[in-house]
Image (cartoon, rainbow, N blue to C red):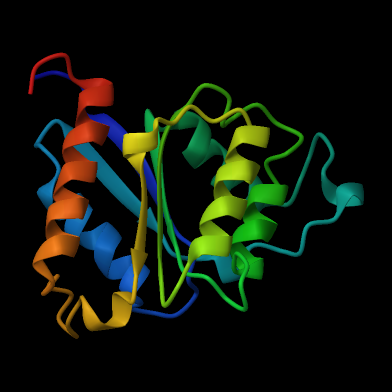
Length: 180
């Protein structure tokens, strides 16, 4: 049996059972069987970025987080927008990666799902370009008005949103698989 394609999915929301988590859960349950998805939803456990701690021996939780990214074949980030910006917890996590090359040339999918999300989406794209992540336009999606598009059980109830996410998954899979 071939080795699974490991995807490390990061939710930018610290709220349990958030819309962003529900989207990642949907993706993890619907990607082809060749994929193994781990959802990271513990951004609040990461200490505030401090360059003085970003040495050869950073905090253990940072080493764990970085290792998960480094060992993954691909990354999906799904984030809300807070006050026209990325959530501080997600930006903090990404700042812990600036001194590394773990995102360099890594295949990435970026999803911003929020009330509006435009500003956070632009910021996330800029940050990931700075970290040398590899992504294509078809692996970037902005879902506006997300709360009315996913029910409490995590089911995507808006057909347009479901189509967009399914197309995203198909495009992301193509990054790894030669035949779909």
